Length: 229
Image (cartoon, rainbow, N blue to C red; front, side, top):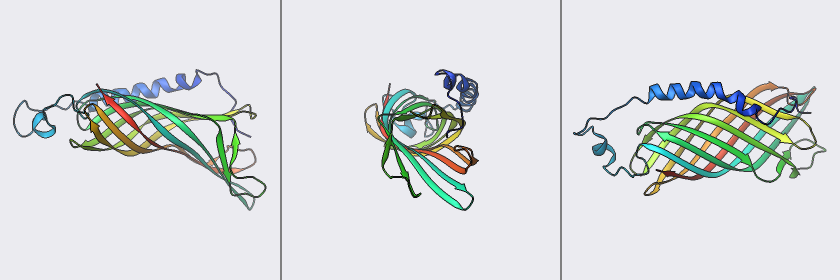
């Protein structure tokens, strides 16, 4: 049985506001970088003079595909069980690049269709589909190293993950620091193609199921497009 009672639909947003404000403040102070107007260290000399480049400073939006996975290892006495819930999701994102080294990015992901269960324990059928959903909302600082064609970046921030399976009448909801790694490729004027991995949540000795000791990890693998204004 899932261990947290189902919350109101807006609880996820309310619990998100204060940590998001803290991350925004961090990003504002960390973004104070300037370039000389001329010379080898000027912005145009280092990154090109085209202000419409996909890696230029400014706002951007995007969307993509995400593969969301919950890996749960449970133990009761000497019995060990391994359950993996997975789902196909769509991700919407938006952000602002302060310079070629730092951006602030928000993401929202939600699964589309049923969730699948793979299990290593006896008596549980693999590939069983459940009517339910997973979703995650988060805000990240995005340190990066970029060239005219490629950017390598990290993601570090705060988010809230939820999994709701119909029939349980309860929901797993966890807020935590989240981190990830990725890269993006210049797909043409204004466009980037990105791929990345994010660890949404991890906890040892989680009480996801009653009477069991469990280790829980939540991951997502993502790929998509961004458009720079």
